[in-house]
Image (cartoon, rainbow, N blue to C red):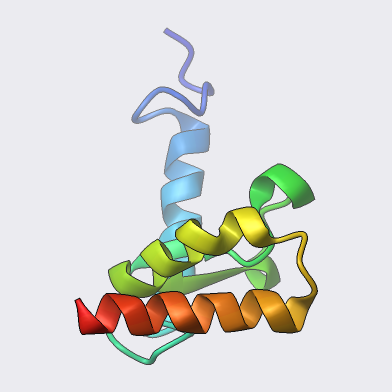
Length: 98
């Protein structure tokens, strides 16, 4: 078993990843960077599949509700920024009313 394999819990890369996420949560004070509620989900601002980077300035903490809204409209990321942001706001409003 390779301790440096990031897919193995307890491996070096896994511990570094967990430490990075803890740092981001503490930096953002466990506060959702969209709505201000408590949160602990570390989210890539630009999806990792596009950026292929994980840097402190490229991630943020989200609550479960905002993370769900982002995930539902992330497929629309090719839209102009203003339209994409409006879709996120609409999805958040839909989640709040349900």
